[in-house]
Length: 444
Image (cartoon, rainbow, N blue to C red; front, side, top):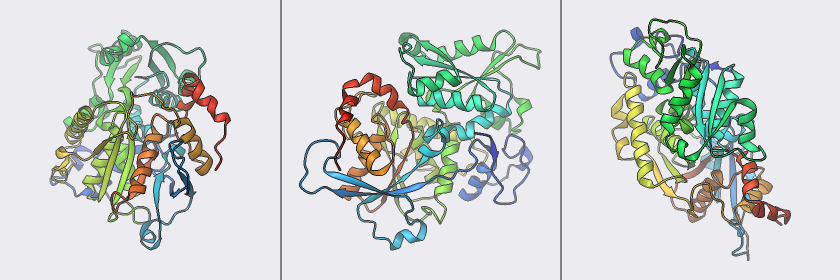
């Protein structure tokens, strides 16, 4: 994945090398929603294009079949070329939902991980960072995405993975090990993530290097209104020195910072084009939520553009209070960081909630897999060719199927596929009996 600059849509004022408007370019009046998006998107990106495939899934009932597996009484059929834009009004869609195939963006860096890094990596590169430190679980898709993305652009990644090294390296754990520098951290130490990341980053930087959090990069530029890389000062950097042997950036677990929302703004701007989903039609976006950053990014962008989109986030890892707290934190952080460009009046209702947080259809402790869910993933794969994993994307698929069949509202349901299917390899080691049942193929 090389870095690319998004072509200009309109004639804009001076843009500096970081992709942000220069201080002289900042307007006295706040731009409109579309003007803000134009200014925000006129910058360097990791992905060549925000484009992504949109498929349609028809849901049909199986007559006379009850009980059994998760989807034993339904079947799925995929349409690779559905009618979009104005043509959606003239199509009898029946029971169906759409799926945004972000899982196809990159072999290893796909789904919401690709969107989070889309705007983040150019900032890291523009500030001369040499090393990136982050953390995650043993099968962390985030850690693997950071490792691959850094390796592709000549940066060194240092990955702190929770727990012990498995006997056999598979899935995202294998990818992280091949592309990055992995250190396994005891769970007791990992519980103090901030201290752990800072300590390891300082060790990587050494006596002559410096450490910075990604948010500090953008904060330093925006706060001074200069947007100049030269104004940036590294944490722990020796006083009186201008050149550092190593510049280390810390990326929080899951990239759950406001800067990671940039990629979601770019995606929403793209999907809302008239020939795709458009700006007037109501949609209910269903997304599985680990940290909740992706859901908040979708909701924030949709609200700012005035789109009639509902964001339904399936909670996987925490309580509703925690997710709402995370939502408020990200919104406040985004408003603060981009206050020079934002018309905050468009986000007046954001503090009342922009995401509809819901429990998983079958709640459980995060990371656990229930009986029948591997077979459900197999069924979807065989009937549609779309890979799911039981921890994340199956939760969104199951919720979208339930909403569609129940006719809960008049909105068209859309799943954002968040990728993560390489995690199945790690689950196969952990749930051997469940995967052994796949020998009994589903009869459609």
